[in-house]
Length: 312
Ligand code: GAL
Picture (cartoon, protein in one colour):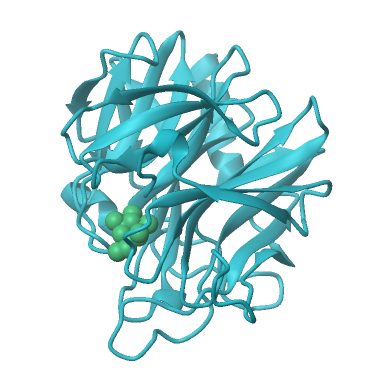
């Protein structure tokens, strides 16, 4: 899988899982993302809402399309999932307590002035997910978002608020379907979006992008000893060609292949969103600095072997 290009599923169709996330469950990887498989609306950098797709794979290379995990609602113009609405950056976690899969997403109206979050649940990782609700979390905006599960099990919705000025961590109830009311801002007035978060050796790391729509910009990473902060912006973690523009991509999620963290990137093609590409790159630590080094190909097994060599 050549990084920075369009990827294909087992049937030669383009993988439509943008702004997404990969989880592992019972030895199978599931990739959720925005299905953008329609031509752009004439004159717009947008496609009609199709829904959230799900792909499965035993090896992160061969992907089987499992259909729409959450579908747009074509016949109800008031639905948050109506075809002219926005449903972006879906993230899914498995909740052991309720034995369900919980999906959170950015929901918006066509003008993108609502800035809310949605939640849906399913018994099967492939869906179909049942839509539960659309909300303004703790009365705040929620544009670009992710889910982060801390080592104590607490799950946070991490969302860009105040017109993208500031990211908030808002904790979820233990069934992951609602907000507890606890919320705190981080990176105040820094205008960061596309957050992707991990924890290593007691330190939290967040990779994010600047706010330039579909156009790439410099990634930055921040670190903190406590989730509540202080979060310190450290550096651009990218190394390689076009590193100042995140190799032409934008962060969306960090997942693990065995113990090796990997960063997923979207390579948006604003005029033909359905032809947007992907990269998956291993995250390493060089002299305690988080580093995302360009590789022409995503080779999950190779990066696992490399990780084992590092451990030796
Ligand atoms: C980006 C954001 C994407 C999408 C896009 C629309 O900044 O990360 O998820 O919302 O803007 O222009």
